[in-house]
Amino acid sequence: ANVGPFAVYAINYQVAGVDKSRVIAVSHPYGNQLWTSSDLDGIVMGTPQVGDDGRYVYLVRNVNDVGHFTLLRTTEAADSAGVLYTEQAGLNNVNETGKYAPLALVKNPNNGQFDGGNRNSNDVAAWGHYYMGGEGVAGYTRVFQLPQDFTTSSDGSVLATQIIDEVAWSTWAKPTISSNGLSIFYAITRGELRGWYNNKWGRKAWKGETAQDPTNGRTPVPNSAALSNDGTMLFSASATNSFHRIDAASGNVTWTAVTATEVVTEPRVSPDDTRVYTIQQGAGVVTAHDVSDGTAIWTTKCDKYQNQNPFCQYGVEAEFSVSSTGYYLYYSDNRGTVVALELGGVPPPTTMAPTGSEPTTAAPSASPSSTPTSMPTAGPTMAPVPTAMPTAMPTPIQPWTRPPSAAPTAEPTVEPTAEPTVEPTSEPTSSPATTEEPTASPTSEPTVSPSEEETDPPVGADIASGAAGGDCGSWASRLAMFVAPLAYLLVA
Image (tube, rainbow, N blue to C red; front, side, top):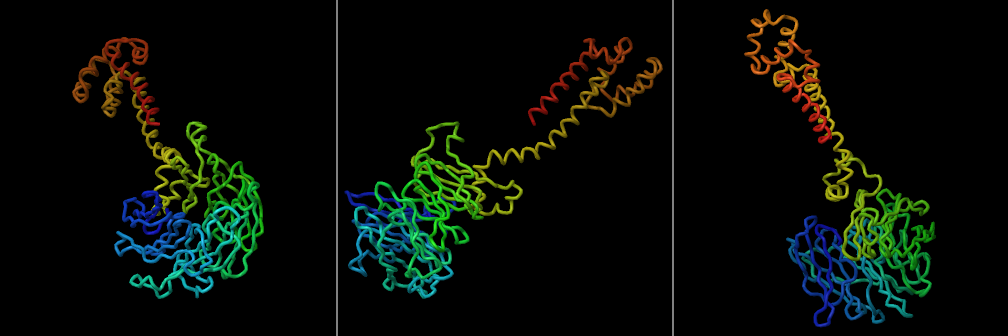
């Protein structure tokens, strides 16, 4: 769907054998339905396009093999939309017949400098005639732009489309328009391209040739060409299994890459113009090409990340998207499985933080990057825990070497002071001095354990024997010895 202040898509269906369509608008990014258009005759071609301010939706549809351009206008609250203007092929030219191919829209171009544009900066919609097979391949290129003084309260009676040129070709795809509105490129019949580069669209165009379909030389290139962000490079498939980089100014082919199956979706260029992405129709193979020479930087398909399932991927024919940051790629196969790929060069979470407010980075980071994101963050967050555990482990280890202090581990500050007074002095003389210590610390075990320490060495009795007083300290210390590392492992 085309995303503006809201997203729109078209559904095509039949009523009593008659083709019908509707346009549906949903809020972005939450997906709540905002409005549904009334029934439209015919089949909507491609994706309807939302205008720059969200007040207009542009589309073309074919009714009984005759093309129609339609402009919808939304209400102020964007809760409904109605047909403001529609025009069918042949209205201004009786020789013009046939279907329309999908349209492209450039929003608020710097220059609306097509023939008759008069530098009008309103949105520009452009399209060509749809190739219907057979011998007839000729058609027209058309354009529509709201007048400069048109307002939301203006009447649609002043509107009209314009024929840019009568051409000896037709197309299956929407054209590619530069952001400034000066360049336009068509993927056309006979595996060719036509382009107007920084030029009025009615002047002589350059001709670019890609590989032709060996079974039918008239077959058009199946999809639109992709224009680099700097406007100098075009990337286009062909009518067979090859992929090309074309100079936008001259139409000359710079390099050709051969693919296993056809590429029928429009390529996507990375924001930094260093990579171009393709998805092959047959098995949904995604490839990142180096724009300098067309070599494959990497190639992947779903059996690499879906439990090695060789049957996970069906063909890919729908358009796909690359996020505005260039970090994620999204596509859907013919069975409706939606896939998000994390592309190379994704920065760590700390560098992504400044762009967290952007919808394009906030949503994908929760899903595709869940595994890699949790691992780096686990390291820093786990670091304080292991440092706390080693400090806990020496505490039970020290009582393990000293049985009397192992039992009262809850009062380590009292016991060290008690032990020096007990061990250096004899029992008769120390007992009056230590009568206060047992009352300060637990009286049960300290009074028993000194009696055991008189006959057995403290360390040996606790480790080697299970004597009455040492047994409690011994098992407590052994338990602490095993539990503490176990706890450490569980946390780590």
